[in-house]
Image (cartoon, rainbow, N blue to C red; front, side, top):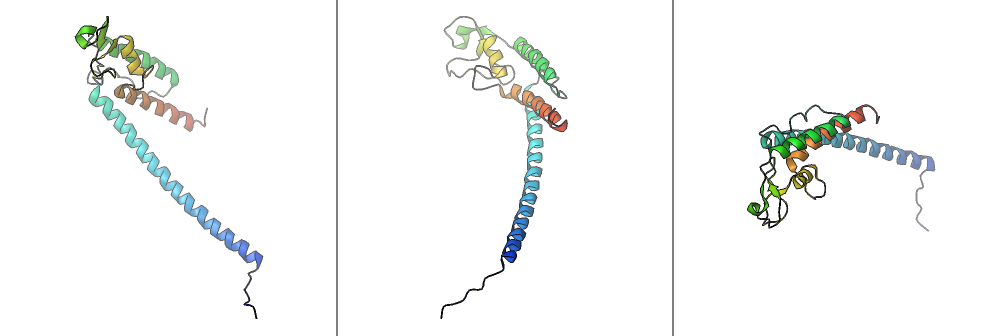
Length: 167
């Protein structure tokens, strides 16, 4: 005689599946809430770290005014003024003195004290190479100090847009 299997009512199966899915949804919601909280904390830590970078590296206040900006037009105006202040604070030297056999001048970044990627040449072509370094244009590496202030402003702009509902 063949073994008989007990077969549950299809309605019981659907209820069991529903209850299992409901538990999974509750678990995922709790996990999502925990991750969102962790993300908020990390976002605040990053913001504080960026401010610390600027405060420690920008001893001359060349990036002053970046705090409190939360509008794209303010960002654009701040960038232009900050780049000019940094370029004006640079100490350009003849290219030959900086290891470059070309002509013109070169200058170390007044914020990060960085140079272009060539190991034998110090500083950036002055003034355009330094401008590009500050803004991260035409180069793979933006000045980390300038970027910290810049990204702080961008973060506030995004937060404002999210608060306003994507406007």
